[in-house]
Length: 204
Image: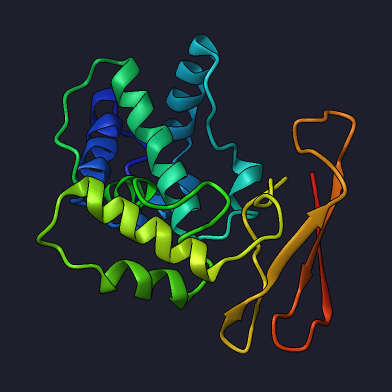
């Protein structure tokens, strides 16, 4: 259901309902794509505060199956409400899940990568301190996602290759994502069972 002719306060009510979990991601995403007033107000605020927002041309490029993407999108809506000093009670599932997982996952892994990460997190007993839980999860992940010298520094989202249910061994990469002259980086992995080389290429 679209609210194209509504006033700003009504459009902002839609945003609040989304952040409070009263509107699903799918329904709000459709609203965002089709309601020009939502994008108008968000763009206006973003330009004023020099902050990021999703333009119409960005939307079709989004991989909505990824938690990080959905959470990032929802966070831009939350940021709009914050800059407008609009009160809300955060209950957006994607934001809350991503924040929780970010406590445990190193930056070079992505929760959406594979069932292995889900299984590690779900295997940890709940009745322990957050510090112990975080350490146990990180130790388990480091024993599974192995690297020779240092973990990959991804140019884009993590793309750790999995072969027959097992993460490949990370060997090296041919560039640094902080080097502004690099718009292509190649990552070299090895299948732990066959020693076959695996190459992942990321571009800007």
